[in-house]
Image 1 (spheres, rainbow, N blue to C red):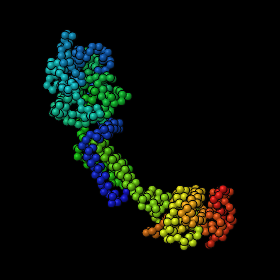
Image 2 (tube, rainbow, N blue to C red):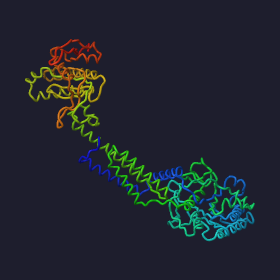
Image 3 (cartoon, rainbow, N blue to C red):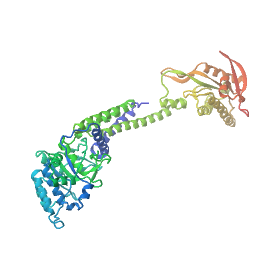
Image 4 (cartoon, rainbow, N blue to C red):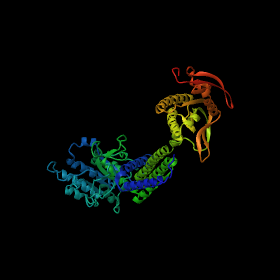
Length: 594
């Protein structure tokens, strides 16, 4: 049953929409929708990477410190001066575009431990610096302050030769964006990737933005010990082929060290590692994004607010169309967002999607609440005018309001008070009304308990239908049970009446089963739910036989056959009825046999 624009429903509808807009404003101004935004963005990145990966025109080469490197270089990293010096000499031979270190050089001299080690590293830095730009990575302490590097090493890197290794993770600890506003007061802090970009493109000014994870993962890395072996052998061919003119990053690719959870797997050589990747690959992906089309730029906040407002209009979409409208709108948003992301623009869908879902769920909830109130109001207003079964079907919206009916297999019950005219002469009108109400209260309950539908009251008479509006396979069974319950209830009522000094009453009940037209009869202005047809006429005539045949309950042969309870009945044979061929009837009386 659709929500109607009643005097109380329409203001509630608009109040609910205003509440939805308030929630949308809260979502836009707070991080409540961030988890959904992160999930949607990561899913988009993975979809693009799988089905529409972007081309890499300027690749970054990673030199990895792996398990094999640790086995070959047995000293602690702080004493790797000679190995790093050999690495830098190899870079001088290869002449890459820039060399960046995602490892932190010592903050003091170790000559006292390994004499001459400082000189080996310094010579490597000097010779590399003459051929290629260098950027040394700078880490930070727990307070966010940069850790110092031994000044001679830092001096050899030259101006702009250091960059922070700090990254900007989101609240879920995943690094999705590049930002150099890393200072305590958001002041700019040159980063490793940013400084490497400036070495390659001196006029470049890297802006904040999202890392492009639609670029394919790096297919492989080159082990550090392999580079030092090439350098020791002066293998120009391999060094030039691997590094010439390319940005190079040195960092750890160990399986249990410096790992970060990312939206996609950046390590092409680890297809089954999930999304936990070496930190050096995050720096590499930032530099790859900067060199291949730039960072992904987020759409302005105002456009997100417009989209959220558009999604909020799902509140007013009719219920039957709401699911389709939601699917269409979300599908369109996803398609637009994917297209934008493919072209370097990020459309944050978290808030619009959440607002759309809230509009769908909120309007459905409000509709359910208002319809429940409407049903309650209908029951309170009309429960005394229609049978409970009819009321139930009306509230559920299963009973068509239009005039007309349908052919149904039903059992019709007619009941009438015997000698009511004589009884009316001995009682006042108020006493008669009170007596009838007490009587109907008893017999009505007996009929309703068996699922019967009371069609109408006719003075002291009553007509009930079994098998409509709810279909019953054998409607005679509950009809007969209701008739017996009516007679039992009447006995109790008569006992009370006799105690009050009021004469007892007797009734006659007639039952007949068959097909009848059941539905709304009358006019558009006033109609009843009733039945018409030969079955109804025969049931009425059978009820009229009860007085002459001496049985309070008389049933047709069709009813007894459907009941299959012949021992309880008395065969009264074929009886003449007015306006109809004779009808074979059976009688029933309360007692030990019944």
